[in-house]
Image (cartoon, rainbow, N blue to C red; front, top):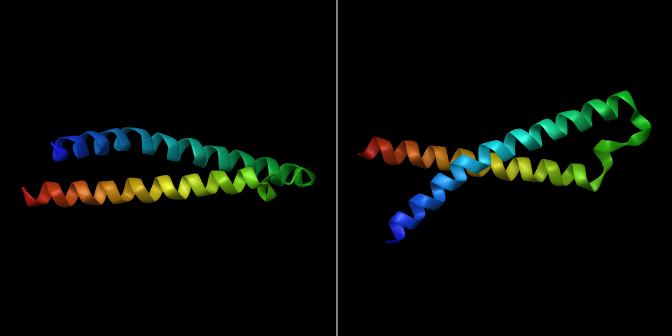
Length: 77
């Protein structure tokens, strides 16, 4: 029972996390470009920008770990 539930959670995370990573990456790229065009706005120094980077790092790490796990699990079969 737990195995089926864990597989469902992993499948859900594999569907969601790559999209979150793409969205946060693009948001950071936009903030970086706007900050370079208008340094007075100081977008990179805001707390929200740091949160975007944190979300990106967490999503990328979890996605990578899940992919590694699934590849190892697939190779064992």
